[in-house]
Length: 392
Image 1 (cartoon, helix red, strand yellow):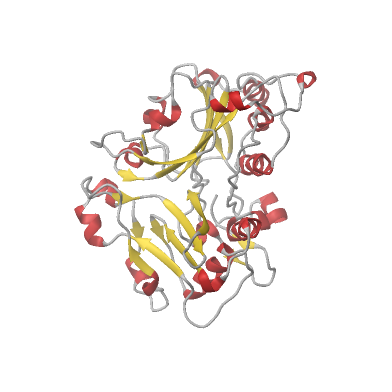
Image 2: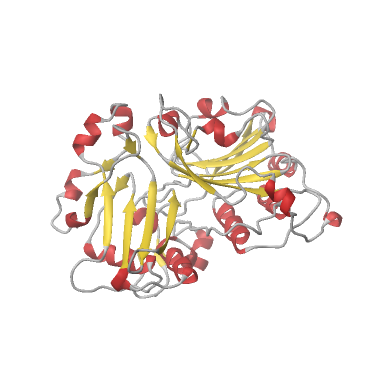
């Protein structure tokens, strides 16, 4: 049966029930409430490889979801194996899935199936030449808290069992009888969800989440030609990365190194490395003689051939031969990366900045941005502070 827009809106408004405005109380949660959370300060884990034992530092998708207690979930992914995902979700759990799609054959918008229990969202792409929705985040709702997850893993089996991915998780108290004070993290997260066309009744649930102890920053990308993205392009990609770097304190280029890894490499030039380096240090577009202090990790062909999980894992690590052989490709910046588990491949997307005489300060980005201009964007040199971005 085809559901009307009003029916879908009403079902989403019952995304485990919004409360009336008259119940609003602005307050922080107590230390005791925070202490009951599994990950109150946030943590980074690796995905557990098939055949490897649990060791406290690795997780499966089931570990992340905790399906026995999960009430509702919002997940986003470039690739989704719906049958595999639903096998990890209990019957009756409300699920919103934002995923990539082919706008030539599928329409944007919101669709519902399974009696309103499953909502599929196709975000708007605008006039992007190569439309890609690559974001990989989750909001998992439990009776007393919400888990925020940012990862590099698609919602498919190979990403959670045959490739080394990274998962950031932080738990935040939930109280549907309160509206908590707004935070910078909450504002940026809400904007990121709206950019992905997540229905407003779902985004409104953030009002009842205490984010006061979250110290991480949100860095997202949105296709530059997609409607409202033009109005605040400084909030995306390299431009947003530079904003966050300035908030954390600008760094001395003479003592700062930037380490990058992504499972896909696109066209790279020394100028692009300078733009990335400058953004990571909180500076504007710049260039200088020689190469910037950027080191790019990547796998060798021999590592790909020797990985224990064969071609299904190997085909997820991509760099076109013609790009790597281009005269302008900065091959001297490439370094061999080794996975923590022997004979496996790294699918994580990481940027690490270290500064100081002993590299004693810095920050780390963990998420879904590969080291490509499609993901991070290209700086608009005519309009400092803006970036042209292709992907979500």
